Image 1 (cartoon, protein in one colour):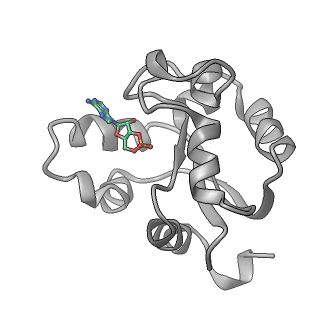
Image 2 (image 1 turned 30 degrees about the vertical axis):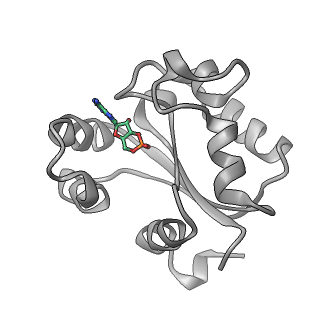
Length: 138
Ligand code: CMP
């Protein structure tokens, strides 16, 4: 399904109390929530989700962090969802993110950058399927 993307509100933003403000910004930017849940990744599940980064030096840090607390996972729908959502969240490194973007407003650091956004339609489908069954999408 095109026009859909997948996001997570990461443990730093959850701990810092930014979940409500981030969801508000997402819905006010025109995204319809197709599926949404609060959950917590085990270290093993975080490793599976980020398998593509397995050889990167930050893989251990990334999977430890992503399993360190609760997250919110969601599938979002809007025209041009993947590209527009990456604009809305801003650069991976919050110090390089544009003013007004979610990472500029709410992220802590490169490793703890508040939100995830899929980088392609193909990965949006894979990532959404990782968290949600057909019965959880509306
Ligand atoms: P995201 O794009 O959501 O998914 C991969 C994550 O890896 C990325 O966000 C960053 O949080 C993290 N990441 C990328 N580069 C580094 C790095 N050099 N050190 C630590 N974490 C990183």
